[in-house]
Image 1 (spheres, rainbow, N blue to C red):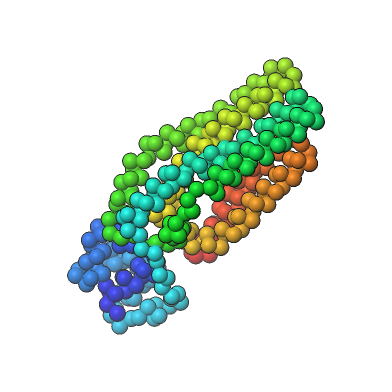
Image 2 (cartoon, rainbow, N blue to C red):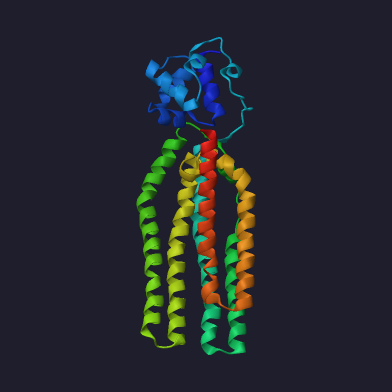
Amino acid sequence: MLFSEKLVYLRKKSGLTQEALAEALGVSRQSVSKWEAAGAMPEMAKIIEISKYFHVSTDFLLLDSMDPSEDGEDQPAEEALSSVALEDADAYMNYLAGRAPKVALAVSLFILSAIPPILADIADTDAASTLGIIATLAVVAVGVFLLVYGPKMPDDFESFDEPVDTAYGVDGAVKKRKENYAPLHSRRLSAGIILCILSAAPMLFSSAAGRGDAFTTTGFATTLCIVAAGVFFIVRTSVIEAGFDKILEQGDYTRRKKIARRRTVPIQRAYYLSVLLIYLALSFYTNKWQWTWIIWPVAALVNVICRSIAESIRAFDED
């Protein structure tokens, strides 16, 4: 095999586009294209950099007689990647732009669903408690409706959760669109974080005022409203930002992390379904809705910690 053939083999084996490899090596896409077409050879410093990047020897790259199987690695079968054209990327991002507010509103409603039972405690009657539970179920139902209602996501868009091969010019166009969205993303994310920080103020003020349980309960309900507003901004912009990262395969959606998610997605779904069942069962059993909501931030924190540990272990094993 020639150097050009080996470079193509290594790039496709790693699931990289020419643009992605060029960016990693600090060269232009045209340079990578010429190398793969045997129209030019990289300088020795770049060959060494390529060998380190793909974890192969320089002999493997330079000796024409050396086949991939002779480099000492078990070479997995090359995986067919979904091809992504510019119109596919644009359609996917437009879909997410319309879908993001619904997802964000649904998550906010799940937070707000704890308010009716909390306010029902002020009346302290069986009728009020019953109405509070009915209102909670109604709010949750609306949230679920927002998540499942609407046009089904096209099958082609599901491919973005898997490794993809972007056509020429797609990465540059998506990066430009992401750069244009960056100021709005920063504003929405900042607004969400600020609201979440300030949300503690009503609860702390009502508790410190000492005007009775009703005043304290109202303050806590106000806190949840502000949290819900902050979460709306964060989730809405995070869904869109994740779409950019899926196409560009960066951040939390690099090629390796996408492949790793194939094993963890079923576990994640089962985990949060279990958390939901525990939350509802504990809330209805204790009727302490003002406290049981803490299950959600704790569950999210545990999930982040477990994922970080798993990624660290995986990175250690690969090294």
